[in-house]
Structure formats: C-alpha cells, structure tokens
Length: 127
Image 1 (cartoon, rainbow, N blue to C red):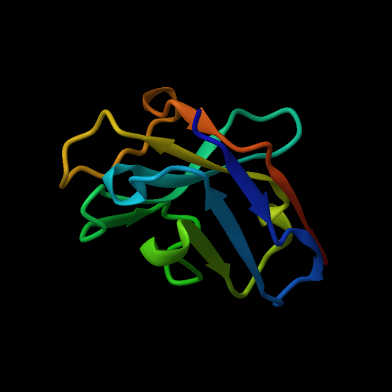
Image 2 (image 1 turned 180 degrees about the vertical axis):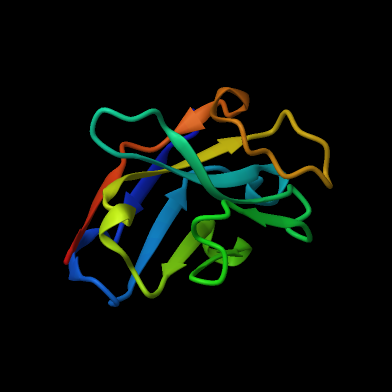
C-alpha cells in the first residue's frame, strides 16, 4: 500500500515562505510521477506543480510560476514544494499525489490521473 504524508503547512504572512514535504512509503519511489495540488474552501482541487517520472520535466500552474519550486530527494523518498512570496490567494489545503501509470517523460496535471493521495496540509497566508 502506498502512503503519502504531507507536512510543513502553517500560518504565514503575505510575502513569507513555507516548505512542504511529502514522504512516500514505497520501495520504488523513482518509478512514480509526483504532483502537488491544492484546494481552497468552496473551490475544486487544482494543479500546483508536478514532476515527470524521470524527474527531468516539471510543470507549474501559471499562478505559482516564479514563486514555487518542486523538488524530490529519491534517497529519502520525499517530494518538496518550496513556496516563496506567498499571497493570501495561496491559502488552501495542499495535497501531494502519486501515480505509476504515466509515461516517463509526461508531467501529469489532472487530479483524476493520480492514484494515491496524502491527507493534506493546511497553508494559510494572512494579508
């Protein structure tokens, strides 16, 4: 069973930074495509950032480009989301997700394509 556990959320002032972590309990972490999504109250879950399975390709939502950075440490089975210059509109529950059902070079941006999800971590940005 694949388990994902997010951490690192919290309350921060606008302009501040947070780093989210997602620990993944699998033996073959480097065979998974990984992504971050978020969901604000009364809104649908939306794509934030993702790696291709090869980790060579990355993609970001337009709203976070230049501010957020996704990275992974295969030795620690962990994916990170560094969030800088945070804005109140970044307030949401952030989820990491994983799937093995993607081609090596494809970045998966649709939530329905992911098979495994963490429980989420709350990020609140005050103005």
